[in-house]
Length: 137
Image (tube, rainbow, N blue to C red):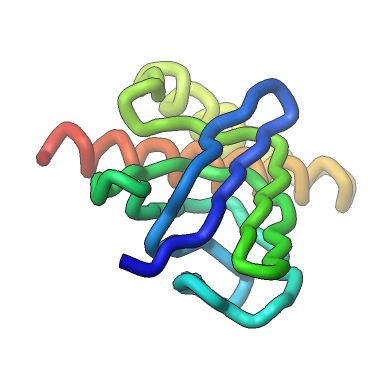
């Protein structure tokens, strides 16, 4: 099996570091897939769900915040603000974040506040979708 080295580094922790055979990340243009020996590039990461197959063949999921993915010489490094496994997500907290963001969007504040509320809403929705998927499986 062809693999590459993957490091997912959040601001507060090393989320994952090890071998990987495939990776799918959220971008502004949709989901982006990465396999071994991918060309060198840098990709912007959007808030959303990512998945990867680790070196032992297990599928792992993550909810990522915004950041960047750098691919160089069969090594992928992801630098992001936050990364969570679906089982780590507190449903009540995510629902409260969505409600707070909804109220902020209804308030019609300045552009900065609106964009911040949109990002908070996107993250809350992503977290809830990931949680729903793991509870069904």
